[in-house]
Image (cartoon, rainbow, N blue to C red; front, side, top):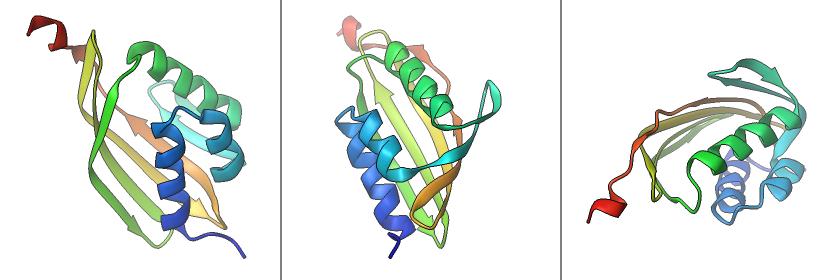
Length: 120
């Protein structure tokens, strides 16, 4: 029996919150995931891995918050913020299509700005 979209979405957030991209990919992503992002329409887990790597380089040791999480049927929507020493994201947005216990489509958008943590 496949997991619900809610279960997959929450497991995805748990895995990412502890930095376990590989477990997230294995448990929650389809092999042929379509990732829609600033680089275009990319396919496969390798694309998700590279996107996560870039985000980690841009926001090392960041604190993430999720002010909006919505799941309706096979669709999920996430608004997130992040703060690191150098950069912050005030409005990150991801959307997901989750079918048969796997994320099959994900879109990602965020804009980096200079962080304020070092100015305090």
